[in-house]
Length: 302
Ligand code: ADP
Image (cartoon, rainbow, N blue to C red; front, side, top):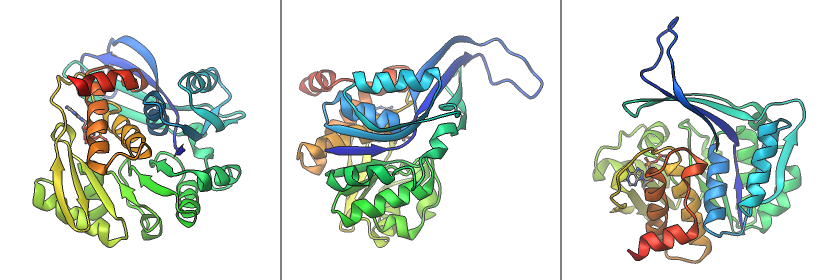
């Protein structure tokens, strides 16, 4: 079994001609509320790809929290670890997507802030019994560190997607088995600007030095830099027409762990994850863009 611990957000998305300047009012269009949040996206990706997955998260006691909860159940997620926090809104992201494809995002953690070390006390056995624990950085560090420590002691493999970018304690990194930063996150963690194979390996070596066995630096359309035991290589992705890369990294992580749970070799699990993420970038939104298992299998068979 896989356990995902992380955030749940309602993405309020508006298409804008350009970003409004201070004091300016503009007319946007195509307003949509799309289920998002890195934790939820990764949990949904794993579930749609048929992983046996439990989700640990906090939603608010508002309409969106209830809707998200129902959607998780529909996607086949074990929601016993999804808590409802009274008197708190569900996390939100206000997202503006400009006509030239750039986005501008403002987050408010809201209920996600309640996922502390104390709040996950009742989930520790679930973490101990799981084969894999997958986490990101949109919920309080005390909860993430507690979960990682418990997992490490129980031989549950810890996969950390260190997003959004921030520095991390050596104590946390020492509990991580697999880390999956993008180029920005790798730079924040290591101080190395990833521009080519050599710098990618340099960043990976610093993370190996912190005790992490497997480092995968995701490189967008180029694929990932995979490093183990101090030597690395590019595992290329798939070429597709990109419409919206929101949740590409999340789909990649959810799919990667699904592959590992099925005992695929690391490189095959990465190929599987590349296929799922490639499909997601051809579609709009976060959870609206995540493919099903049938779609990924069909894509890989082509
Ligand atoms: P993040 O979204 O976290 O910044 P990346 O942009 O590195 O992460 O993308 C994560 C993964 O998503 C890549 O390793 C790749 O599999 C896939 N991906 C991202 N962008 C593209 C793209 N334009 N074409 C094909 N695959 C992509």
